[in-house]
Image (cartoon, one colour):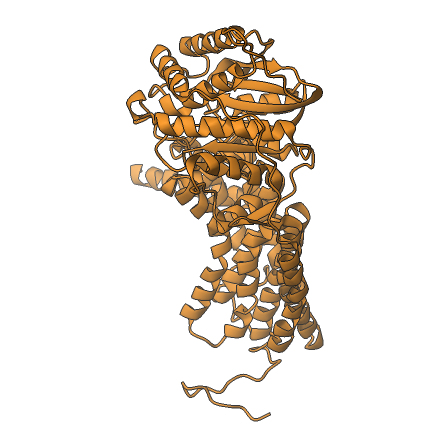
Length: 628
């Protein structure tokens, strides 16, 4: 084949050579497998049905609800869990329910707050018995942070909960009739909602009912537009019928201004399940649950959450919408379909399984390309075993980093608590103890200094060895991607930019280093989506990395996901070393036995101790000669 010249005057490498090993034609052709998932995606996108409006018009008393919210916020401005105000607020809610003649149940327990003291917590609920034992739960947390009176978050939701319960009692006026629901209705006031939703988690795991649906009311008295939250603590969303019906009932009262998280945000929430609202534990367990709020992804600012800022009109609108929604659910029959995954695009829902198939299909071209790259090395007789040993050493090092993290966690160096997401407004997520961080960093740096002696180049590295290093790392990334697919297919969203960008790193061997650096940085876009989501959507800013580590230390992020991430980091480090010209297969002095990291650390420590002893003996000898 005749070699052509590039605009810079350099000869372009031949296809299939060591400098151009990636089969671009095969890679592009394999994207044909994406066509079928796209067709499935188009045919499975639908507009979910909406349950019918209730037969009775809403009778929610907005003026009374605002008066109740004002009373609760002014009488008990500090309702932090375990405080005297929390006990008073619990008594207040109990008295309100008792005045309606409804059966009242309580659940008390003690639990350590996130990175705080052990507190006595209490859930209180009133029950309106129905013909069916399947329960529809209306929920609102009554606690606050204690910084402000919490008029909106969440005296407004608690007041609406009380007013909704009032509608199922016999009136005091002559001729008033009691409303008997078809389903059992549970009006649940939870504790520690701002502290990771501990009360909701407790009820979800110990509910004495078969819960068919949950409606959570949080901060519904703000001036912002109504908003629905459908994500959960697992890669699921709430049932499409519940989400569509809620949106319709809210729009009927407040106008067509109901919002929800955008498409990208919904995909991120499926790939990295995370929510600060109390529908999360129910959705994770397969129970249809939704949150209605006027707040954002994180709770409203406690300093400005005053009674004067409470919007009575908005509270009345969402209260009537909640009453209508409750009536629709009560007379509806489609309540037990579980929580399959959906992504909403406008008023249409895309089924999660179709998105999973699409994400896997987008992974196929990379797998085809890396397998062809492996076959290319075998055809050329390029040994991959040394590159595999190099990758293994990097993998062992990063798993050692994970072990160090959990050892320091066991020693109490990191934040601990229930496996729930701490409230960013309450927890100092960026203020980790400095001394344990320095100690952990020192251990990791020492381990790296010991290990890098076998990974730094001691001689010029040939193109074949560099290609072997890239191929081994890309094969490792393929295994990591398949592990991600097995644990949470939606998390491939964070892997796809890396695998498709880094597959072409061996192709840029003769290009300027800045191009390789830009291509490598493009692969980091996927993992950065998690940090950007925490930093921007949840208002964490530069505290997002520390908050992510906090989620790991309390157990909200599982150790399995952490181990897979560390394995991917090891592969990325080897690709970066090759691209930067700092790669070398593991090497040792001829005749020297192979030693692992622990034996090498002991050897380095012993040799350093011997050098210090010889230095002390020399100083003593010099002092003796000087004295004579």
